[in-house]
Structures are given as C-alpha cells and as structure tokens.
Amino acid sequence: MSLLLGCIADDFTGATDLAGMLVRAGMRTVQMIGVPQEPLPRDVDAVVIALKSRTTPPQEAVDESLAALEWLRNAGCRQFYFKYCSTFDSTDRGNIGPVTDALMTALGTDFTIACPAFPENKRTIFKGYLFVGDELLSESGMRNHPLTPMTDANLVRVLQRQTARKVGLIGHEVVARGAEAIAAHIEALKRDGIQIAIVDAVSNDDLMRIGAALAGMPLVTAGSGIALGLPQNFRKAGLLDEGAVADTLEVPQGLRAVISGSCSVATNAQVAHFIASGRPAFAIDPLRLANGEDLVSMALDWAAPLLADGPPLVYATAAPEAVKAVQARLGVERAGLLVEEALAGIAKGLVERGVRQMLVAGGETSGAVVQALGVHGLHIGPQIDPGVPWTTTLGATPLALALKSGNFGSVDFFTKAWSVLR
Ligand code: ADP
Image (cartoon, rainbow, N blue to C red; front, side, top):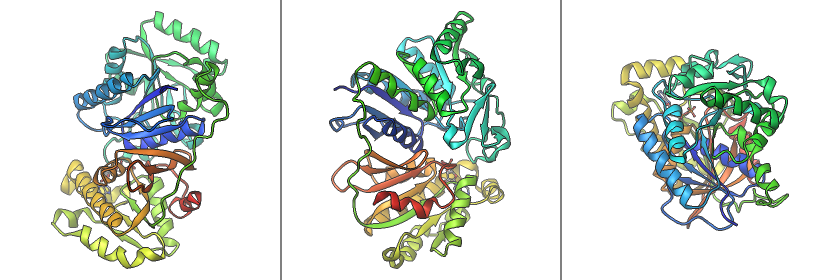
C-alpha cells in the first residue's frame, strides 16, 4: 500500500513527537532527517520529514519545506501535514506563517487550519488563546525561551503577524458540535475570505472531532495532537488496516547516556531530579566553551568510567537567569551554537565508547546530535511519555534514541525512560 500521510516538521523532537502520535493511532511511521536521499523502508503508512527550520531565516525555512513537500508528493502521499511546536514557537518573522503560506500556494489550496493543541500535554486552546497547563502561553515558561520567547497567547494575533492571509478562529462552541459543524463553519469562514483558522481544542475528544472534519483537506498545520484524529479517516476510506500494531521495535543493546541542552522548566526539573537521585552529572558551561576550553574531551573522560554503571548525564540546562546572563555575554545565537556543538560532539564520543541507548533533551539539541551522529532516519516505537517515543536509527548499526522536546516528559523522565525499552 502506498504512503498516506506526508508530514513536514520544523524541528527534530517535534517530528518524533508527531511520528509517535501517528504510531499510537496505528500508522506505521518513519521519521527522516531532512529531505530523504534514499528510498524509504517498506510497509510504511506515514513519513515525517524533520527539518531544522523553526528559527532559521524565513526564506530558508520556506525553501526547505517546499523541497520536503515536493519529495512527499512524488512519494505519493495523499495528505500533507506541517507540524510545529505545541507552544507555537515562532517569532514575528515566522516561520509558521511563511511556511504555511508557501505550502498552501504550492498545493493550490485556499484553506487550512492551525492548531497546536495537545491536551494530554496540557496545551489547550480556548477562544484562540493557548494555555500551557493552567497558565496562558505568555505567562508560562515559554516567555523566557532562549530562541522563541512567546509573549502573546492569542494565536489568531500571533499568526496574523506572520502572514498576509486572513486568519480566523473555529471556536470551541463549534468544535463541540462535531465534524459536520466544523466543516460548515469552515465554509462560512472561507466566504469571509479567511484562509487559515486557529482551532480551539481542550480534549482528545475535540481532537477526534476536528480530525474527522479534516478528511480530504490537502494541508493540515498543527502540533502533534491533531494527528490523533487523522488515521480514522484513512481507516474509514479502507486505506489503513483496523487494529494494526505499529509500535514494535528491535532494541539495540549497549551502554546508556543522557544529553540535555534544553533550558525549559520541565527539563530543569528533570535534570535536578536526576542529580538529586544521586546519579552522575557533568555540567557544560557556555562561558567556558567560549573561552576555548575543551569540555567535550573533559566530559567524555569523565563519563567513560561511569558508563558501565548506568547512564551518566551531560547537561547545559540552566535556569532562565543563568541563560540570560550567558546570552548577554555571548549573544543568543552564539551561546546556542556553542552549546549545541559541544553536546553533539559529546554524543558522538559517547557512541564511539559503546553507548547504544541515549536520551536527548531539547529540540535544537537533538537536531545537532542527530546530525553529528549521521542519522538519516528513525523507526518510531513505543511511547515513554506523551510526545516522546523511543526510536531506533535506520542503517547498519542501529542506536536507540529518545529525543525529548524541551517541555515534555515527567520529572523522572531520565530515569524511568529505560524501562520502556525492555
Ligand atoms: P527546547 O526543546 O527546550 O526548546 P532546544 O535544544 O531546542 O531546547 O533549545 C535550547 C537552546 O538553548 C539551544 O540552542 C541550546 O544550545 C541553548 N542553551 C542550552 N543551555 C544553555 C545555556 N546554559 N546558556 C545559553 N544557552 C543555552
């Protein structure tokens, strides 16, 4: 059977999150790192192409997304999905608006939705306002994000600043009435000249209702949550087996390690929890990197004798004040790159020292790690926490990787994740 759903994700962990969701919903899914240069494995229902386009200049993000779309169209996908973060991570320059615009134009479609909601992970949208847990997006930790600080919770407003197309809203009062009401409302919005609609969603039931209304929509733009409601459409159309098991993995055996470059609230808590439980941890200080100190070698020498006794942690994770201080000294971009490069070098060194199972925290960080390891694609396996599945790398010497988006995972994520592999 041919590919059904072709997805373009704006960062690596976001791609894994989406792929995990599709696997959960019964679609056999692979994640490719960048536009694939090789044929896909057989027996795949959905493919997610992971780009690193969340914070690149908008034109670069557009060009890469269009190249990915072209590949997915040639592979025969029937529906396309642009995936961004469940906290709508972007700046006023983009890249959610510009990429959505370009994909719509390329597909010749005049309507799509925008819905980062992921209720299981406490990302809900009501009246167009995005909530993170009980807080508005703009009052959550996301207001301090190193690269994409989110200071406005009204997604209609946020997206409208990024696109010339008219942005509207499908409110919860419509969503609650079901797929037909949603479809009717979409027609009404179109008549008003609206081309992109933010969609309210506060529960998985909402996601299923929205999903049903998206059958046949050429392009969907969303976080990973919306993916829960799409496979039902393919099943209904007889294109996907009922009850197919999609999340089996062959687990590579070897040493374990954790790498963390995310500075999110959740990751800070996970690092603190790991250290408080008496496990070994090595801190990477960006200022020392900027001074030219070889922290990569130091971290590897430190980790080598510890690996046999369970996973050591190497982290740059720091509290917002510390991150701000470093950024003031080095600049946001330079600080980010220095840390990403160092952590990627350490990950590579750890694999050379026999690590075969690795947790990586941080979207950009995961991107850098996967690039350094030369990984081209991932088979998606069972979920550790919502949004974070275990994966195995495609290719000759497989590696088990869990790539965790900053804010995801329970506080004991770094210690509990391993039990899912068994
Ligand atoms: P998240 O998924 O939480 O957004 P990312 O890895 O995508 O995490 O982004 C975090 C960014 O912050 C990366 O560019 C990383 O290199 C950078 N960073 C990590 N630690 C520090 C630090 N201590 N000071 C400044 N920047 C840091």
